[in-house]
Amino acid sequence: MVTTTITPEAAARDRKPVRRRTVRAIKVHWPVPATTLAACAAGDPDALRSDESFAPLLRVLETSPELGDFGVYGDVFEVALGVESFTVRPGARPTLGSVGGHFLSSTVAVTTYVDATAGDDELALLLARLTDVHPWEVPVIELSAPMDLVTRA
Image (cartoon, rainbow, N blue to C red; front, side, top):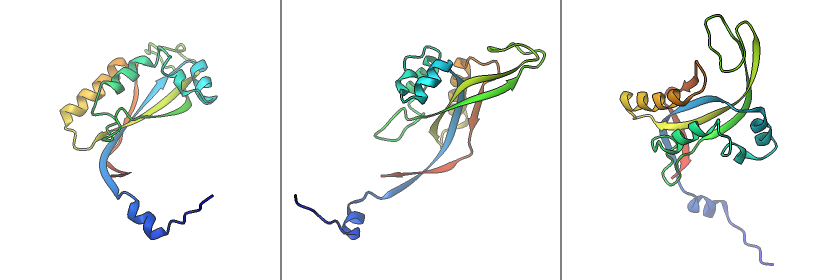
């Protein structure tokens, strides 16, 4: 066996430079069945692809080239598993639960990014596409302030 030693100087020379890009994060909280959440937690992230309740969000993410654009990678998004808690107040028409009840919902938080130079009209259109397909009466969608994302060029 031949062992090759790479000096720190050589590694630094071969490494691509760090690139900073200003983006805004969009995080969508999306309900999924407990079985889908459990499958993902058990190591089967493809359970999301076969989940019909997740399909509308997936379609928006995959058909909006402005979302998750990382140059040589597109449609980039991250999924965090979780549970949301809520109390249904009078006047609500909940997808889950009933007025006066306290409920827990298996949920995923899907984060993607849009270039910070996107105009207000373009951003409004993207957010409208997300809210239009969201199953909740009051969707939870977070939009961050511009921030730097660090990648390799």
